[in-house]
Image (cartoon, rainbow, N blue to C red; front, side, top):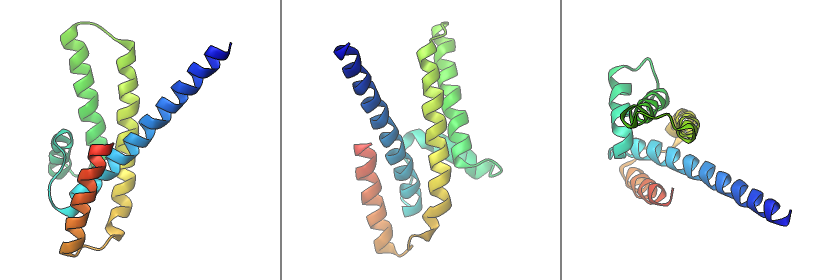
Amino acid sequence: MLLNEKNSRLTLCGELALLVAVIINSFSVVLMLYSGSGISAISSVPFAFSEAFPKLTLGTWTYIFQGLLIASLMYMRKKFIASYMFSFVVGFVFSQFLDLFELYINMLPQAFSWRVLYFVVSYILICIG
């Protein structure tokens, strides 16, 4: 019984770490965009779509793109893997935080020196996340 409690605690800590990583990465992507220095590779396609079709937010395009990636992976493997469905949840949470951080990022100053700092911080945070 003690072993089950320990495994449960480890699972909870792992899920909490995943949530923290998703929050850090979504903030980093938005901060990198705000710095004017570009965007991470995985977010470049959804960003391009959000610029071309602005009726949908970056977060929405990110969720659609990640969903298509996961669906295509299952299609290519010709096998449904239930654990991949959790990726949809993680992608949705990531997308929601992207949109949330985009709402408030404009409160930060935009001077060149600040933008350099935003780039450095976002790069470090993406590495950590």
